[in-house]
Length: 555
RNA sequence: GCGCCUGUGGCUCAGUUGGAUAGAGCGCAGCCCUGCGGAGGCUGAGGUCGUGGGUUCAAAUCCCACCAGGCGUACCA
Image 1 (cartoon, rainbow, N blue to C red):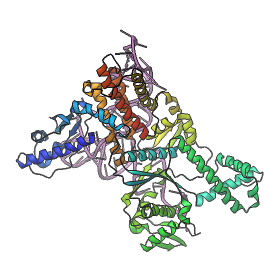
Image 2: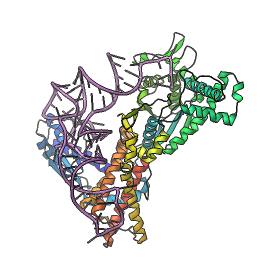
Image 3: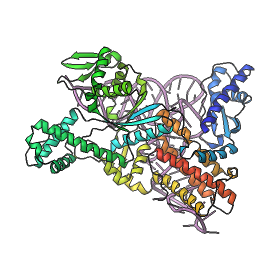
């Protein structure tokens, strides 16, 4: 709705200028893209364009003069009440109250589907995130990627894309071997045999617990097997258990996947072989030093990368190429989003090169890098290392801070800024956190609507034109911005705008609530305001659900 | 060394892609409970946007150099 108005204003301005040019009132220069923005100061209206400022140079006229001449030709759409010129050269537009107020009815009619867009036109889009090796529990940094990915998925779905969420389960490869060997060592140790964990092995205490658990369930039978065989079998059991744990941890923060894709299956189902063959056909394969290389230097990369080690085992890069071969060429996803931690940043250019080598446009693979999370307890920094024993798991964080606060906190920062997560502070603030402020608004509304129900007020026929105060209109102005937020998040893949919007919406509501008594003796006004309150609840619940947070009726 | 990311009030962060007096939250100083949830509302103090140049009518935003932090730069993932 609001987006439509914005689009109308673009053409409105274009037409005005063209007409002015036809009548020789403005020089006929080529027009830059017409950008409509929201002025930060509400005094300047709902929309503004600085186009005259941009035209000043080519038209060789003062911006104000250009602005004035343009406005002479403006035929505003009906949603616009007034427009004006402001120095140094803006054209400002203000929405009509009549139109604003009517949006309440549209929101109520739309209900849960309010702010859903057709932007994606049903196009398929795959988003892969978390994909942590099942060799240990999720830690806090993984939580960030999980929250980011699931929120993006929710938002893209609302924008009209057909979204598929996927987790790549690395159940093959070197790390799994190391994991199995580590587990084997702990298993032996538990049974009293002095075997040390491999030097590059996993040292976390959870391995000890895992070994103990397996021992209790499966018994001593692995002692009879040769070490490598035992380690491999133990590894398999361990991976199964860790995967279960990861799934549960993700559920705690409201993250679910459509597909758990097995890395092993890439070899079993020959995707790996086909992908390598395709690269070979393209002439990107080189044998050197007993290893097989991907000649990424042919595609503008600094250097080549190893696909198959000299011992014959494929690298993580090779298997990731096979995986993306499968995504693009076999499952035929047109757009794929990968969310990676900053520690994979070096992997980006060569992956893009690989996509090109597979014959696809690298632009079809959108990689979101999210910066690492540093944990603190007060002043003490906690190092994150999956290999050492001292880690704060996602699970621990969630039980300390709560799932909603955790999600909100992760979302509030843009992916490319590192975050300092002070657990003490997060705990301390947990009763005075923005998340409560927002959810409180929702609960307050629920309470008001409940009261209206008790009083048997049927506000279905409420007359929204009775809403005229500034607080009411300001709230409506917030409500109608949600579709645009969803559009921006979908286009930029930056979900941190959602929590900001939610906060602003809650502020507008609380302020309205203070100034306007909703259920009062004035029956007609009450009905109109109940409609507004109901619409606000719809918008609040929508953002909260996009962010994967609860919309409590009571707190 | 090279590459990517970051540097904005005391703290944590936004800033709609170059525009109007740089915005929130927390914290701080005040004020507001004879009404639907005070987990609330309102007001105020606090900024040379890391530093120095440049581009132009206009720069937190673009370019260059430098400083500081994070990550990467493997036949690890």
